[in-house]
Every structure is written in C-alpha cells, then in structure tokens.
Image (cartoon, rainbow, N blue to C red; front, side, top):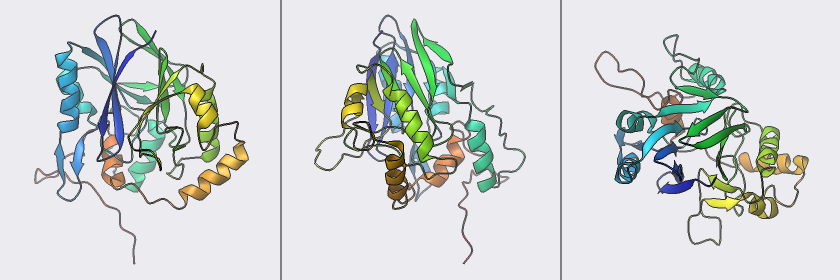
Length: 287
C-alpha cells in the first residue's frame, strides 16, 4: 500500500513534518511536528502546527498517531498542541528513557521529572507495528544519531528522521550523548535493506552545495547508489572515520537546550514556577 504523504517544510529549523494518509480512508498520522520558538524572546508560536491542523481539517482527516522519530535537538515538538486539537496518540522509541535519564541529569530536573517515558502514549520497540486506518506501520529501531531513533515504515514509505539525509547531503551527526557512528552505520544498512522502490522521507534538508531547492524525498535505491556518505557500498570503518571527523567540526544546534528540555517531555513545557512563569535552563560552564 502506498500512503499519501504531504510535507510541511519549516525553513527556520530546516525541518520537514509529514501528514501520512491512509489512501483508502480518512485516517492519518503526523510525523515530527514543529512548535515555532524565538530563543531571544522566549516566545512560542503555532504557525507551523496550525498549517498542519488546517490541512487535516480541510481534508476531513482523522489523526490516529502523532509520531516522533526521536528527541529532536533543533526544534520544539508541537505534539501536545496537535493532540489537543486533533486527537491521536503520541509515540516515540522505547529508548526515550535513556535520553530522559541522560538529560534529566544535565538539566538537574530532580525527582519530579519522570524518566520512564510516561509522558508519551506509546513507546515503540523494534518489530512493533501500528495502524493508520487500514494501513500498517512497522517500527525499525535505528539508533546512532540518538539512542532512541526510530524509522517508521508505512506501506512503501519510510520516515527516517535524522538517520539519513538526501543522497547529496549524506547522514546525521553522532556526537550527541548516546550517539554512535558505528550504530548509525548499522541502522542505515537496516534501512537500505528495504526494497529499492521504498520511498525515503528525511527529517531535515539543508540544500547540498549546487542544489537550488530544498528536497526531502528519495528512494532506497537512490540512497544505496548515490548517498555521499554510505552509497556504493561504503565500508563501516571508513564511514566511522569520516563521520567522527566531520562531527568534530560542527557547532551545536541553536535550539538544542530548549528543544531537549521540551521534547523529552513529549513537547510539554516544564512546570511553571511559583510566580506562574515557565523557565528553561541554560547550563553554564565555570570560568
């Protein structure tokens, strides 16, 4: 079965969100939504999420799932906002508990912050399945970028999050806590073992040098043949050496600190303090 896929690109964070429809009915899922956030002012905005809501409502769709491929470090999730207005269950990988434990300590969240994934409605593991109407989705655990990364294979479409990018841009960084270039290589091989005609939908695009337009869809066959990091049968050791050297040159994402604090809570903000204001923390190194 081939789902109907509609992409929503947020240029501010280079994120692609998707509405994935059952072609035989009205059921759909939303993958990797965005809550707009201005770091300088601390203000949120729902324009990106509202575009998805408008699309769903105008097409008479019913949201079954709001899916996260991982805990994003470059944008805030709009999952709870979408759930409040459209319904659906929020799902993420079972290893969210590893991410919560790691960053619960980083941000000194204390015992009130639950590290059991209970903020989400469903924690998926390798081999799990779910349904969007009559259409089945299957779960691949694809760690490397983060320990909790998943790929959702829905019909002939695979939503890979940050594991793969477009063939001319390559693959995801692996230098976040719990990341591993070796794990990423093996996760990519799992994705590339899908049928060549499988459509690959990536979580971000940054316009590779020489390409004029943003793009987010390729195929397994194209990735196997042309991906600049893993195509043409690239060996694991060479990939790991390249990936680790490249990652050492990269700056941290601009929104990593607010994103992690919010996204490990399934898109919810921390509890307001006694003055009624919500605060996000910025750990500071000592001089």
